[in-house]
Length: 109
Length: 112
Image 1: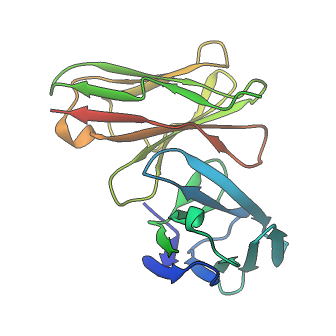
Image 2: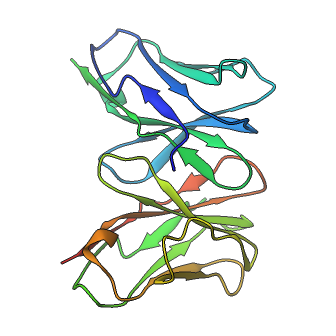
């Protein structure tokens, strides 16, 4: 079963704009991770935020975590065409990661 | 250093055949995971190894699926009597402890 749900399912923006993706989950977690996937193959790890953290930054990425609402958001600032990909949140509830269905981001130049 | 590698990158087989998918994790990573991803979905957990033993195989869909990691490094996912519904991308990941998982490029399995 899939715990995480990303919103929106698809997002289309222009280069230079910011992209915000949201993730909701159902059960308590140890940490939450965001991954990017190009062309339906290998996933690239973007950022990990632990359950006792509220915000984390990495380059143009900003992730927030609200454990009371069981939700997280991923903000990509100043988007580029190369950011076009599918983005997944994954919750760590013990051993395996549980992924959502992902948000497909399209950035046009 | 080298990342997680998976072979083959693509595998086409006929219904009823047996297939083996191989994963070579990052050197030193003690944990290894197998996931399956169908079109338009996120990856779904299959099995997790800590060292040589399968610590959690609750995601394996049925007894046609089996995985081994005999020396605590390379792992092989084995699927017997393949069915068309087994067609998917099979992803392997490794990690050191309870940290981020690093994924391989996947094996795309097509069962005709």
